[in-house]
Length: 424
Image 1: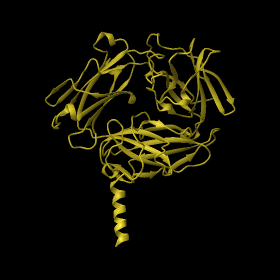
Image 2 (image 1 turned 120 degrees about the horizontal axis):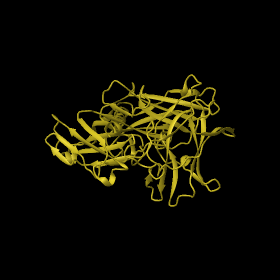
Image 3 (image 1 turned 60 degrees about the horizontal axis):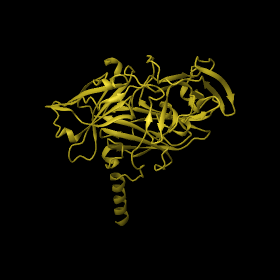
Image 4 (image 1 turned 30 degrees about the horizontal axis):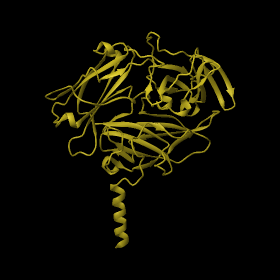
């Protein structure tokens, strides 16, 4: 009886508790291993979509990434439910997932005919071994073997149970002081037929510019509550810097030199493409241009399957500056860096040529990027070197979370995407 009793207790502990060691604190969109490259997460079949899935939707999210090197690795992943602030929920995994907490990534391929060798990994979920019970914020944590407490990278996504009607607009700010450089997002939440007690305390509204959490307004409160409508139209808090359209480069076909390319040369560690020196846009007038809002598209026009035959190329960035900017650092940033300010993307000032320089390894394709400044206090400024204009095209994503009294997690009950150009 004792062995059987021990087995039952062990099984129950496994089923009803999180037995793995989770990263502590806020789970960010971050890559922690220099050999992990080109991480993307999107709705399957739509590479430029945001990682948003409806609960019980007959669709999947697709995670892709490369591991540089000549040997395969055993990669596993866990899916973690998070609260609205992206800290891990206190719920056990069996309360929010059907299936296994830890799963192996079985799909991978070796690169073909590339100078830089790598393995391309892919996983789609929900899958046979894992599906979702609850709507909310989620993070997929990828690690080698069973070392979950040492993640290789973390990607955020959301599962939504859309039960609200959200209407909104993006427009030039109402207050004159903000009208040249900012954009205002007004919206209302209609919850007809849905009883929401004390919405000022139980509803948590968030707005993201281009779905980036480093461009988020959080803890927004309704200005007015009218029966079953919550109105968010604060002229002072619902504001974002408009920013500017992203810069771009195109390496889809390495046989042709693009207009913004300088030298293309073979160096000791691969092919290097040097971009022509660029200027700050801070004092330039706004110019409309098509961009991907910071995203990128992997593509090798001379290949068959870009996921495994696209080459990795060193891109050398050059931002002209008469002097080194005091009290902070300059970075080149975009989707290729997960919008993070990592060491590889930090620019070094070269006084001999009066320019900031950085050298970043990226996979062949089409890329958006921008130059940003971070001061000594860690505050990010993406307008100092790029300018900020109310005319800039941006997407704004509104997230509505609900946590009634007694509930132990933040349920995502509404998502709405707005575009600034449609309304300006």
